[in-house]
Length: 348
Image (cartoon, rainbow, N blue to C red; front, side):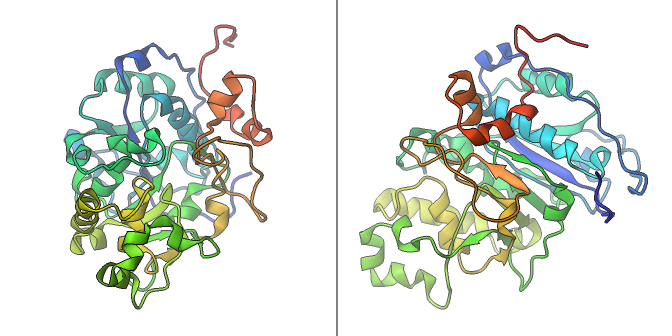
């Protein structure tokens, strides 16, 4: 059932993708086409321009970003389908795919076009070397993929006409209208909004060397920092650019190369720059941790409360566990969005 509230904003979803030539062999089914509800605003045809400027025809566009590598393409296809299926105005969504500069972009474009032939989308190359030299080894190899750090550079990658983005990881599905998430107000001049988890042990995200340094530990002075998961964020790119947030994140990564101040991949630099200064988002928009921890990926239950987004952050991914015939109970909620074509699939 479509929501009764009509949102007049045109939504554009940014998904960050990478692939290898082996990924081209993966075959996905064509997704059904979803139509706007009667009260959706009409959008003018895109201008005749090509490339990045072709998505600038509507100033109300909202962008969403996702990070993944070749192993996550299956997850991103499911995420896209879930966004469309639960949107009240799916025909108004424009997708922006940021891809690794070393990826086979033709194959990626063909994969998306084949499964979603009605989509309006664009591809943006990301130079892996921008982040590769700044990455420090973390607790899980998958977290060290350079494309995981592309979210740091969104303000540079996307056209300046794009003022607001919703960032999404690829190991999740929505079960609610993305318009509600995109409409999150960024109050008090906040650069980003995300669900906060103030019961988490915030000090554990940084090393004793960080906390023992008077100058470094003062980073959070006059703030009440809480952990937030960077897999679901609403970002004001105008404020990001004005505050030169990319440079601030990069400076922390450069310091990490000189002295180890954190252990967990791309998350800590975001915490250092933004924790304590973000706008709140209801926890229903990131039921995270369904992939278990970063070591064993054991099954987990949902957090108490309503659910709008299911997020398999952690080591265990639903498609891998389903293929291994060792699924967790909640993996059954991801399976209906899986577009992978089985050799036994019968097409209608």
